[in-house]
Image (cartoon, rainbow, N blue to C red):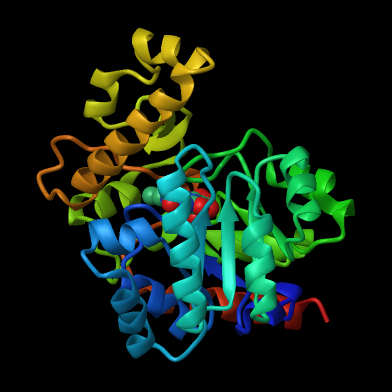
Length: 330
Ligand SMILES: Cc1cc2nc3c(=O)[nH]c(=O)nc-3n(C[C@H](O)[C@H](O)[C@H](O)COP(=O)(O)O)c2cc1C
């Protein structure tokens, strides 16, 4: 169960990805997951804007913390030319610094696949349903990350079982993202036929993650019913903990935002406004120890997260459980 196309493509021992997280991916967390045999994914805006590293220097810092492979997340948002140019530059620098595993989200990953393949690397693409899976396959990606409805961040509409079924014939390895909180969830996903898992929420509640102590504790304390989808942060539903602040704000986008999101021309402005606002708001609330204005992103995996612990201990425990399950089924 532990040797899969994902472990071969990423050059890792355990098919476990610490997914990119804006604003929670800091270099120490990325490095700790990779060092333990999984793979940590760099989120460039989190690395630079939230955690204050010049991009190339941040990559080199991670390299000093671990010699094992790390990955990079390229969010392909085509609405701003400046953003696209910046992303092209970030991908090139990552390649120069030795990164060979990339995860793309949104948009068309073709240009990333072409560049990364030319350097001998691999690209996996985040998808929430079949039409995006087909687009990823046609763009030449090497694997798909099936983001299900239990995921933290921008969750999809489908279950892990449905995604496995509707993406299964595309001829690409599938990684399960969403709802994995403990070792039993990890083993269950591998048993279902996934080539690996991508986890976010579980890795926020770790000693290496720089998120505030109150945010981590809220993840440990929350159960599944405490996770709600809010449109108020980015204009599309994002999974968050239903704190008193979220309850006061409501979950729907305001009337002006809704009207702008419907218009053909105003849609892009509104998206840009949301992107800038959410970048600032999420940075503030992930680091603020007072917990007053808390936009705490988390998925339904909170149900199985019982303590804050080192990221490496999680990776090793999950590996042991998969090894034990393999031995048991022989
Ligand atoms: C706080 C948070 C921030 C996230 N930010 C990003 C991001 O910037 N880019 C991305 O592709 N996915 C992002 N995700 C999704 C994760 O990479 C991963 O797919 C997801 O967390 C898996 O679900 P889980 O939280 O149930 O483990 C984020 C998730 C969380 C919880």
